[in-house]
Image 1 (cartoon, one colour):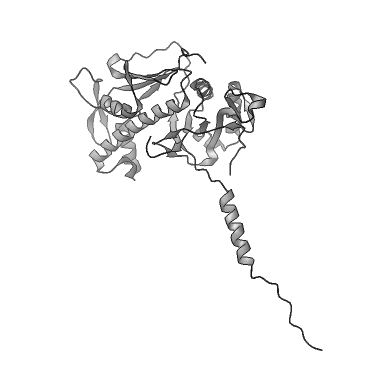
Image 2: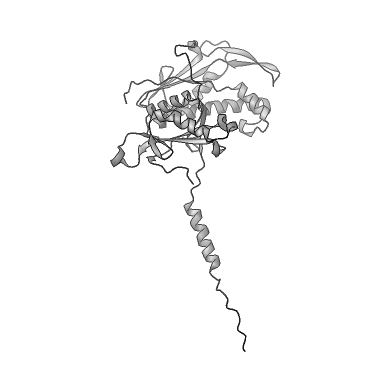
Length: 192
Length: 118
């Protein structure tokens, strides 16, 4: 009896099929990386009438109305130079009345006292302000504080803030540049 | 690979100073935008929690439920990510933020797309 060879499956196109599948999944999978601006909200207040007095010269007031127009300390301003305005405002000028007060603070990590500004950025918007504008302002504020952190990091460690690897150094810089932003409850002038 | 099917239209705003959201398992999402089905739900901005529309008043319950779903040790590390359409008015966003504050969910993230220059 003649022996017949076992029949083989034609697998020549297997690789093509595998590649097609691979490409199909590559195209259809959306991997959205979540990015955003992280903020910590102030804890809820029990006593609503509690007002914290802050001196006028220590506050940089940013107001945004329902037409997305901005006032910084009473003067019209735009997004492009907001970050620089904040950096200028938060810079240290012990003897200049136009800038916020300064105070000496002991930073244990550096082992010495450092002059720190008492300045606060205050942000107030209308209920009709667009979210896009709000994010632009938040972004500018974040940019200002990140730049100030970079300055301090360069001064003390010779590196940019994002390049610091040591957790203690990051903590120290965060202490030197606290994010002093206050958000007031919005007004409803523009109507919504 | 989305957690939820969106029933609101969301076009995220852009920002330059963004951070990556880490530990996705500790992130809960709140979506705000115009309903996708305008004929049925109109064009007023709505809040989406999980897979359905919600009102501002539903947020405390949502926060509690999301907390309960997490490990006890991780509950204080939770982040609430606000995915808000860029044309939304701040009014509704502020209301949501106030509710989150009241519910003691203080760590929030404004979801934005990263751009190099505004």
